[in-house]
Image 1 (cartoon, rainbow, N blue to C red):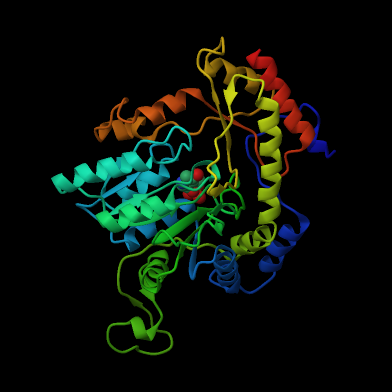
Image 2: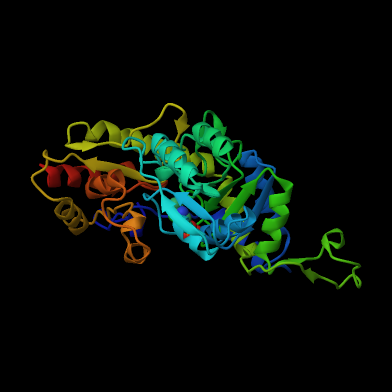
Length: 394
Ligand SMILES: *Cc1c(COP(=O)(O)O)cnc(C)c1O
């Protein structure tokens, strides 16, 4: 046991796993000519695209930036609207507001905790009669389990919207046997490489797509709207130094330092996810006797198990969720809650949303508890989590 893993040190809900080869990969870049805009970013993009089975990948400095430029590439702007799940991190909705578009939500399926397909279809059918169809829908693969992408893509064809998968939780997961990120059922898929996610670059993100036109837009949006490719310029190039700004973009670039870490991490992604499955199975067995529901798994999905969320069964526990949370935290188990429904945030209430708008997401939020889940969580640590949970719920 390492010094930082003493028996009673706190157990976080998530954390990165960094090895000596990860550190060496970063140091190699620090000693090289390119700290940014060099070959490591291109290499990382190539290996992620290959891993996922997508044609193109664009690395950026966060998952949030990936959401922003993918919305812009999809043409989202003022007068348009974007729909997503209320059971997500605020970034999945904020990206609409960055583009000057409206945002709305679709309630969740109480089993998968993902956006509900029947609720989406019903809302689309109504929106069609009032001329309020969304331009973009962002399904979020909550906890690492894919949404019903075949169903969503059928609706996208029928109602004419673009699909951007928020797969920040789901890298390394599969849907109907194929890697999440292959964009078979979407225009674009985005990942985050924040340290709590499946692989990390510190901060970082990526957009994947199979469409060359979107790829070209994404590359330009990432870097100021600038191109150095003479074939994309208006008129003649002045010479080899020349670049043109043909639109407005940002500096959302990932550094080569981050990309090298990401590439090194990617080589272990399948091990990361396999370990998470073993931990999920161990939780599932031990929690059977407790008044909690384990996460339900759809047979089409191989989750990446970014999060392991249980629901406390109402009426079978003599304590509030708040009390259970506080007792576990006091015992050094850093449980968490994912997510506060986005539409109930004060900023979103100012936009007109109200508690009660999306009752399944709100009911789920009252009962949710995220247990520690990460590659380096040992069996002994997990047993401590389970024992503490048993002690609290008895
Ligand atoms: C983490 C996360 C994001 C944002 O990613 P960052 O890299 O932190 O910007 C967006 N959506 C979901 C679902 C996330 O979990």
